[in-house]
Length: 373
Image 1 (cartoon, rainbow, N blue to C red):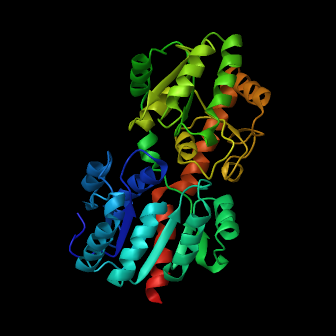
Image 2: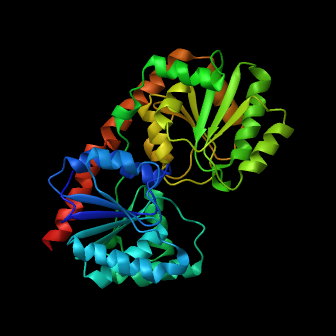
């Protein structure tokens, strides 16, 4: 394990839980442990499900136990951690960690502070954007995971182009090299051994357009009785979506699995990956599906068209196009050779552009650049 007494780069995040930003750090951890730099991860609120795996990989993890009403206390404790371990680069992820981290870093005199934008954050009100603009003078760099997120930060928060760069998320290809025995076991567990499984992973929120996914499921199941849809994740729309599925006669045909940490195994159990989102940045789950060599059917939103070329790694459809999504799913259900070709191409693309070694290499060039200054 890296020497916890002195840290070159400390990553700050809410928790090492199954979210996209969090899994990005989880996949980077083994490469961090093998790096010439010394890394640590601080969880602002709680350790999370992946913390033990990250520590086993060789990266120390701290927990602050942040609560909103005790924000000042958390800022003070984080600043002490930064000073105690002589942290040179503080790299924060997501909005709250970004604000708390920069205040603590300012208090501690941390030389370099970097924030990481993993989503479009369209929930931000005017005062959130104002806070981001106010924090810019003490921010050395902002990182965006897709071109459209970068453009949004330039437009909405008036970030100077010199203060923001594009660095994609990382996914470890080795985690998705799953054997047929595991695939079969997961399919037995789900009761879909003899079915064609269309899957998706993500938070159950409005931007993901899961109401459209249920419409697609209704149409596909009407034509193919062997089709089953698997939805992995939880969120505020969970109960409404389950009720909607039941009202559409999809009970037993659409399976809601809730929050899971065994994403590679579940990806292996799927035959096709489906994204119906109306808004996206660059979903980590898309890269995970590609690493699993799964053909993808997706709406053409956010950073997805930068990653999936239509008819090369998957099939792209305009957002909201129910008939287009149904047609693409049915076409790939009926063409196993095309599915395999698209899946193999998706895997090659993902390994080339999103491996942890490549992404950490890009980040370390940034760290070196600012440390040299």
